[in-house]
Image: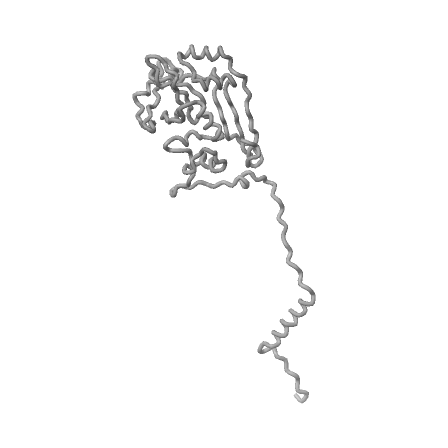
Length: 274
């Protein structure tokens, strides 16, 4: 994302040091699994990723885009902790029997919150859900085969990619726009998010997603108008060209001649005998 794009401002990339190899090994030993090779190489280059950008509306920056990959220390497991800080409080695994196959898409086996799967949070998505690294085969031992899934706020699963590298490309090409992960769900992005998609048009987005349905209304924003400064250029009023004096006289004489020809306006000469 460049600041030369319409309205884009304050593009910030948080620089991070590479993760130590012993830190990665310690994480693998603690969680009894091996990181996929592409994700491991990513952490050896940078311990996480965080890039943000804003848009300027009425000269005031507003945070919009956010691209994030958790550091190795924050690559925490889902389903192991309680939902509430209370004794014997329910966990995500307790919801396993209550979930149905509504989140199962393309007949792929969805992840499980219990011991059948290992799930780790890659991106908290600013509270709009969670992007997760999922190990599906955990018995008898955890296999290194992983997938990237999106867990929405209703706790339904949506498949994203087979590898971390493929997901990283999706993250970059979607510019970190709000709720972009919902483009891979059956219900799609919200109308508000769709407006931002229409404005910046990620190169990988399906254009059919942005098509306006017959029974819906989406405002079409013009970047040049949205990000226009309040300082308006004064409009100069054009003066009508003045008529030459000769034309005014001819116009006056023409008018008077017309008036004299009207009935009742004819003048009589007085008869001296009267």
